[in-house]
Image (cartoon, helix red, strand yellow):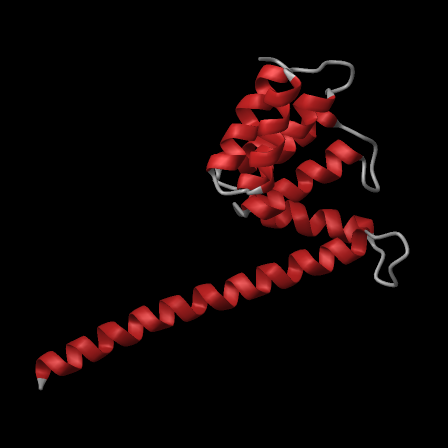
Length: 152
C-alpha cells in the first residue's frame, strides 16, 4: 500500500508539473499573440508601446520567440526607429536559445545587407543553422544562395 501511495504522489507531481508548464506556455503564447495584434497599425488593438513592453518582458524571462520578435521589431523598425544592431543582438540571443527562425532571420539580414554591408558567408552559415535546426524554408534559401553563387 505504501508503494502505491508513493507512486501515486510522484505521478501527481509529474502531471502537475506538466500541466503548469502547459498553462504557462498557453499564457505566453496568448501574450505574444496579443502583442502581435498590438503592432498592427490598422488593428483595433493597436498599442505598440504595450506590445514592445510585452516582448521585452518575455524576452528577459528567456522566451526565445519573444527575443526573435524583438529582433524583428528593431531590425524592421516596427513602431520604433530601425536599429539593426539591437535587432541582431536579439536574433542572436534567440538563435542561441535554439529558436530556428531566429537563425533564418539573421541569414536574411546578412544576405540582404545590414545597413550597407552584405556578408554572404554569414548568411550561408545562418541559413545552414536554421535548416539543420528544423526551419524548413531555410533549406530552400540555403540552396538558392549556393545556386546563385553568393559567397561560395
